Each structure stands twice: as structure tokens, then as C-alpha cells.
Length: 412
Ligand SMILES: O=C(O)CCC(=O)C(=O)O
Ligand SMILES: [Fe+2]
Image (cartoon, rainbow, N blue to C red; front, side, top):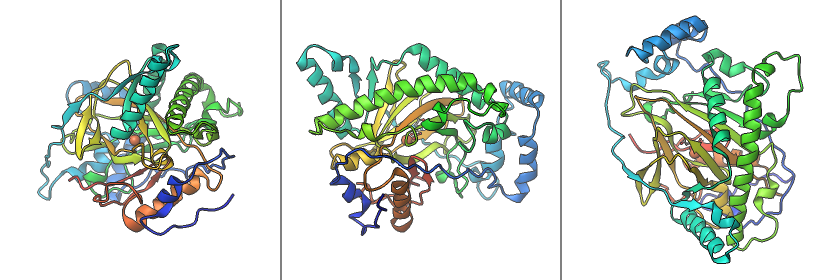
């Protein structure tokens, strides 16, 4: 496997990828390094320690209190990051992020793909291709994933996040090392993700319960089964969509989807806790996805925004639809025909929000996805941006986050 050569700025990996129409290849994937849970300042740590070790009964009491309006006071997010939202006099600062225009994303009925009528099929393909170029995002209905499966996945996701804070970081083989919360490197509100997530390679999900000595595994059987079914269905959907979009560009042979292995694709379970500083906090800061294509199942709370014609627009949730977006690799692979568009999630004070994202990350003959991620990270560190992205105005300091480099945007 050749290593990735550092390319000069302006050309960089991005341009090389753009001219690269890859045959599928074996993928060597490197697991993400273990997430550090302890970026806490000393004067907060004692309190946090207490929070981390609170008993289930204590958590229950806390939940009840939340229900009676005494919310947020002791959550790890507030303890760790509350100081970002106070000015020097100790007052809460306030800046409103919530007045963006709401939009209806292009909606594609995937039923058209299996139509006997060739024109109908072509209309469906054209709608996806058009949206991928003009928006980088679209919604799909009649996507073939049953409502039951989506609901089951959401139920399992919720009970997973219900676990005590400390358990989430080290609970079992299935999840170990995949939990992250907040943004350990953040030094101000604009860099902070007010969210927690499990970022799980498909290989982990499909491994099965191989180590019966690990008592935790049993507890997660229903989660694993739901994830396995969900991952199977959503990866098939992503491969179909990627194949159709690649076919539309004239790539009829081996498609990138075929070079995806279970080790190179991820499920990311996101939870956005209620946030007392929602006027100025991000659930997820502005970023583009570094993968090939992402398929997202979100709940009805809302908060996802994307960049359209240099403005942020809010995506109105549609209960029947999944959201598809183009990642950096697909933009490069398509010679910029399809766009990897910046998006972000706003925090919400009223309701917590859940989403599940599937990241399709193929590999190529000359480099692995892990190498690609490292190169992107180097580019971000050296130049402040992902080389070749259209928006060069963002001042950034990114960090690799499996499938993403979060670009710290100029928004204050
Ligand atoms: O939760 C969402 O709506 C978006 C999630 C996302 O952009 C991501 O995980 O990369
Ligand atoms: Fe994303």
C-alpha cells in the first residue's frame, strides 16, 4: 500500500483525488485512538468526579428535578463548559443563532429507481444528481427501511444514552473507545459541540458476541441486534444511492461502494442534550463530512442547518424521510460535480435531540481512509482548512473525528 505523498497547497490530496477513479481495493483501517474523557480543569474536576460516579437513584432524582424546572445545574456539560457562556462579570452572554430561514430540502422518491418506466427512473436519478450538485443534500422517501426498524434503532439509542455517564465510555467491547462528548480541545463556545456520540465501526457491530467472559456484552444484545439490522439496511441504501450517483457520472464499472468494507464504515449515534445556552451553542459546529456519502436518520426536534448560497438554512424535519449528504471524498471523486456542503446543528433548550448517521467510507488502491484522514488533518493544521474546499474564508483548527474534520468557523 503506497503512502500518501504530501501535495503542495492548492493542489493537495483534494486535486489528486479529483483525478482519481479508483478500482476497489482491500482496506486497512486503523481504529480511532481511545477518546480521552478527562480534559477538565482542576477546579471543576472534583465536582465532575462526583457527577461521574453518581448512583442510578441519584440520577433518577436528578431527572425528576429536571422535570420540575431545576434543569441543567449538574450536568457534565454545564460543569465542564458553562464557563464558555459567561462574560467576565459572570453574566450569561446571549447571541441568537435561531433566526435562519427554514427550507424544504429537495425530496426524492426512491420508488422511481425500481420503476418499469425508464423515464421515471431517469427523473429520479436526475433529481438526486441535481440536488447533489446544487445542495449537497437531499431527502429520500420510499427508501426501503421500515418504520419499525427506525423506531427500534431510536429506542435502543435512547436507552444507551440513558446509561450513567461513566459507563458510556468504557462499557463493553461493542462500544469501547467509541464514546465522545463535548469538544476536549475547545477553548470557547464557537468551538464546542454540545453533544455526545458513539462512533462505531461496522466491524464492531457485526463481530458478534465472541467473548462471553465479558459480562457487559449480554446487556447490549438488543442494541447490537438493532444496530446490525439498521447498519445492514442503511449501508445497502447508501451503496445504492452512491452507485446511482456515480453511474450518472458515467462510472459504470466498479463503484466506490464496492470498496467499502465493514472496517471502513461507521454508525454514529448522536444525542444533543438540552442546553441552557442554546442561543449561542452549537450541538455540532460547522463541518463537512470527510466520507463518501452520509445517510442520516434524525428525529423531529430540528436544528440541522446547512450552507446554501452563502446562507445558513434550517432543515425542516420530515418524519418519512432520511437525509443524504455528499462527503468530501465524493466531491473530489466527482471532480467537484457533487458538493460536500458545510452543515451544523444548533443546540436546543427545550428538548433533547437524537440522530443516527451512517458514514460510507471507501478506500482506494493508493491510500487508506486512515491515511486520507491524517492528510486532511495535516492540511487543516497547516493551512487552516481542508485544501480545495470552496470556502476558504473559514479560520479553522480542525481535529480528526473519524469521519469528520470539524472546521471551526468564523461564526461568533
Ligand atoms: O445530527 C445531525 O443532524 C447531523 C449530524 C452530523 O452532521 C454528523 O454526525 O456528521
Ligand atoms: Fe456531518
